[in-house]
Image (cartoon, rainbow, N blue to C red; front, side):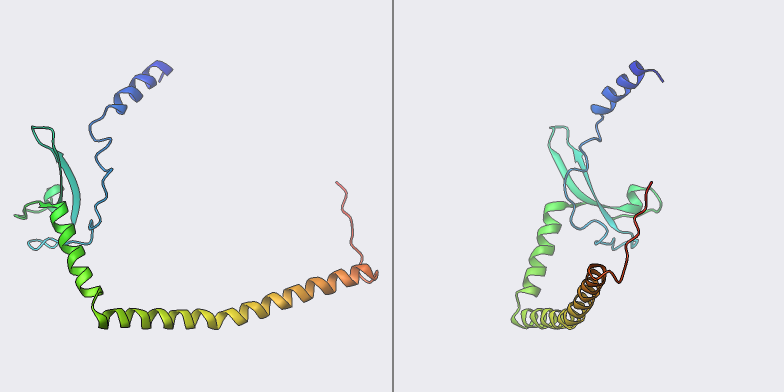
Length: 148
């Protein structure tokens, strides 16, 4: 390929219609499953004749034409709002908050168990370094210089 042909190809790809297609975040991609065929739903967008971009989740088997599935695309904003609302209801329950705090405290306690061990290993390493330095200073241990 010549430089000119590469530049033409780059200019063509710069204007490609799918270039900005995946800029939106689809929070539930691979977390939602089709009720008809069981495949996961993935985020997709499309532009209407009026130029408005619509975002939705679509069954991956329909998208890849692997199976015949009757699941219609679901509007992104609707399903994400529904999931966030349901999650907030579950998480904002007093019992759920207590359970989350309890799990976090247990995790913190488990991590603190390792801290004294790491501090002990650090002290031992610092002592070993100090002993080597003392031996060098007293002439007990000679450092050989390697010349290149």
